[in-house]
Length: 249
Image 1 (cartoon, rainbow, N blue to C red):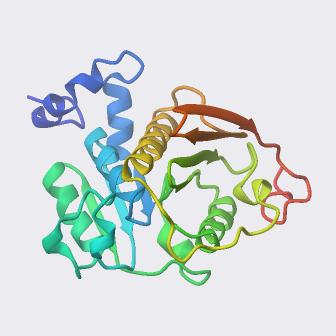
Image 2: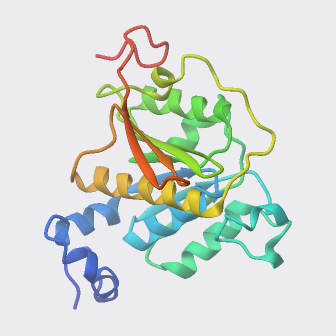
């Protein structure tokens, strides 16, 4: 026998999580009913998807237009050498279903643009940034603010990374942080474990938002220095003149 909304198999699978008093059965049901969108299935997106699926997020939409390349394999932990040339979104969905068959997974092989972003975010309770370029991040940021969808941003390079949670109308957005769009790098150098650290924080932020627990990284940019093994917190203020969120009440 299970409990209302959770099967016996799910109760066993999530037992250690349900035992956390702040989560319990109620929190686990919230996770099961939640819909998360992971945009980009690289060094950040792979562990994000794995940890959200492991936690029991009920529906995952996995978005990436790319195919697996040999140079991805140092950090994109859902893929294998024999996967080179296959679409990341399709492969990631297959691996996530193997990891947790109780999660509904929706792969999307598309490039995010101004024209399709709102449709790709439709129905989401939270969106997570697994991207590797600022142009697309800012497109997603604008759409999430417009639609009122929480957006969990992260960026990584080498041994360094940053993460911040955007709650539209309750704190600054990504454009408040970035007055100008940073220059793009054609190839971003990265240690795989750095991406895993930041992705784990993103997944935890999503779990907290869905269950209503704890204090999210709203108005706070968490900066990670893996060489010194140090986290620093920078306060980020909402800009009244922000072209994206400045008009929100």
